[in-house]
Image (cartoon, rainbow, N blue to C red; front, side):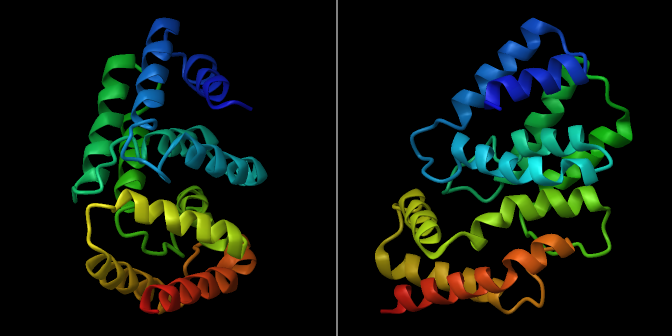
Amino acid sequence: MALRQRWLKLARDTLRVKEEVCQKWWGYIEQKYSESQRHYHTLHHLEEMFQHFDQYHEKMARPELVSLAVYFHDIIYDPKASDNEERSADIFIQFVKESSVNLKEDERDKVRDWILLTKSHSVQEKAESDLQYFLDIDMAVLGRSPEGYRTYAGQIRNEYSHYPDQDYRKGRSAVLRGFTQRQRIYASEEFHKLYHDIAIQNMADEILTLQS
């Protein structure tokens, strides 16, 4: 399902947002994820997340909340900034207020908190399954095929093109080592079994490339 069609089904049909507000916010989502500084955190990233979402949505208690988190989690993305997640969460709250969306306060806060958790991507093994699936589908890229992972790594480098090679290699290697030292990268059992070992190998290979 195309992203626009999926958004309209979610916002208009499920959450009862008025048509003109749905269309306005789709335009904003499309604009933000198409910004020139983005190479990986694009509309394609959302499409890839929803491919995984579609495999597991029947196991989710509130798939509409997970969908909202997907659409808004990277809506603000400035590679030079350190508060993208906080600003993205603020935009989600702005959408809720402007659209009069049919969400209870605790549901709104839940989605906001999920967006904020993408800052650290710390594994939430004891968290509710919807949060586990959301964080896991965002990190599924680490479990791509080696060729697909190299494409992703190149896109991340392009997003951080403002860093000289030496600085980027040092910083990126440190981030990757942090993930490879975790006992779990993925929270859900399904993603852990499918992608953990592949992700570890992909990141180890990238570290070697960065050091060479």
